[in-house]
Amino acid sequence: MARRELRYALLFLSPWLVGFAVFTAWPMLYSGYLSLTDYDVISDPSFVGTSNYERILADRDAHQALRNTVWYTVVQVPAYVTVSVLLALLLNQAGRAAGFFRTVFFMPSMTPPVATGVLLLLLFNGQDGLINTVLGWVGIEGPNWTTDPTWIKPGLVLMSLLTVGGSVIILLAAIRNVPQELYDAALVDGAGFWRKTWSVTMPMISGPLFFVIVVNTIAALQTFTEAYTAFFGVGNTTYSNDAAEFYVIHLFRQAFEFLHMGYASALAWLLFLVIMAITAVQVLVSRRLVYYEADR
Amino acid sequence: MTGTAHTAQAQDPQLVLAPDRAAAAADTGGEGRPRRPRSTAARMVVLGLLVGLSVLFLYPFVWLVSASLKPREQVFDNKLIPETLTFDNYVNVWHEAPMLLWMGNTVLVTVLAAASVTLSSALVAWGFAHYRFPGRGPLFALVLATMMLPGAVTMIPVFLIWDALGQVDTLTPLWAGNLFGSAFYIFLLRQFFLGLPRELFEAARIDGAGEWTLFWRIALPLSKPAVIVTLLFEFQAAWTDLMRPLIYLRDSSNFTVPRGLKALLDRYGFGGEFHWEIIVTASVLVTVPMIILFFIGQRHFIKGIATTGSKG
Image 1 (tube, each protein chain N blue to C red):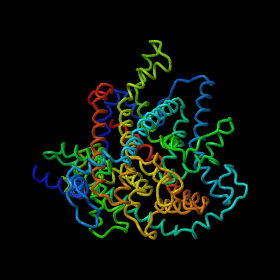
Image 2: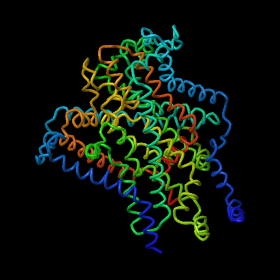
Image 3: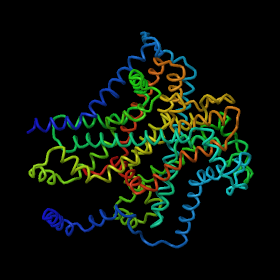
Image 4: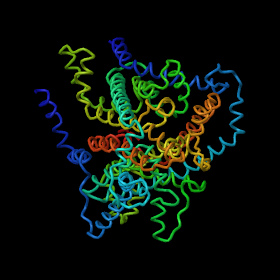
């Protein structure tokens, strides 16, 4: 019986087993090997030891890309998560209208990122963009969001807030699962709205909140499409796009525009290690801060 | 028939013993538990905030649609109602770009991607949910671990595989990887399969049903909600993808709509010939199918996303 079960199980698992071997395990190992070679796709890879990794240490563009990505992650993730929490709390106060507004907040998340990139260029345009026009009404002269290196990343962060809808849905569902008894008890103890939110809601939703933070951190570290659409590609020679060159954009261009496959593989492995490390730290921190219901 | 009656009876005492739990369970399915009535002023403030924020969230797309209905020189005038209403851009965009071809390519990729990932992930999820075998736990942990793997790590070797198979500049690399299941959907479908009563399958087996029948005729039809969520999520992922089309597609006749839009932006946005009205119109065309998809499946989208977070 047990052998029969195993046989059927393997049969059902076979698509994943094959896919894992061909599209995950082998590529991981092979990119590790490629990272130690010089490879341009046309001629065979030639072994160069660790020189690709040494090159990362000396590559100013890679440093710039790393700085851009760290800046973006450190600003975007807290902004994104804060806005998500606030919107979820607000929706929780909306009674029966919550369902409707939840739908409205989620809709922009359906926009293809390439269209979001286009929208960024148009709405944030320094001269005629809607954002600066509105700022002008209140007497503020808006910056050149799409060309001034100081303002490119803030523009991207603001644009990314349009897609908080998914996180809002997750957090709202979590807030609604908080047992009413806890609020009643807090009320008896004389807690007001903010006190209840901070001391009851936040601890009770810390699991899903942690999930949202981890997922968005990983996504922010790999941000690509909106920035690539808006600031890279064959046509853009009019202004510097250094401020928008994020790590994965740099990696992508090294691999597929310049065919530095070996160097790009080293960049990829470094990214992998960094993401693993950051996630591990987040998990360790969460052990102290996240409340999980015992054994559900 | 008797089976159903039996289950209902078995659940009855539980309902009596834990009425509040039953109420809570009913509640999560609906639109939230009833709250204590609040002052009208407070409710108006909340409602006002929500309406204001809704405008903020929806206006970018409204702006885009409005701009696409304006002649070239008015695209940037930021007026909600076009001064000169014209549908010329929607005619011109078909002349400026092989839009129909791009749409066809994207539909083909999207349908194949969604169908293949759903079927393969369901198979794998069933393997994990229904059968007991040594090493099941660690193997499933490995499936989940692949979700953490940044796509960039495997990107180059996977490109080399498709290159070796002569599939670069075809649509194959955009969907065929989906034939092998995807960790997130495997997780989602497995959760659903685990919720199906095991007795059902034991009974069917006694009635002589084979392993394939259990999966294909019983488990899968009963898991429609999870299957729909998987289809919808992958539809969206495949339709909006830009990175893979950038890597694999060279000839513009093979482009998907997002890749085509990027090409239009490069030509008409940066490249000296400013024709933003074409870009704006193509942006509307790439987005509208996603809006339609959302309206068709909004309940499933929202439920699917809410489930995603609850594993935390």
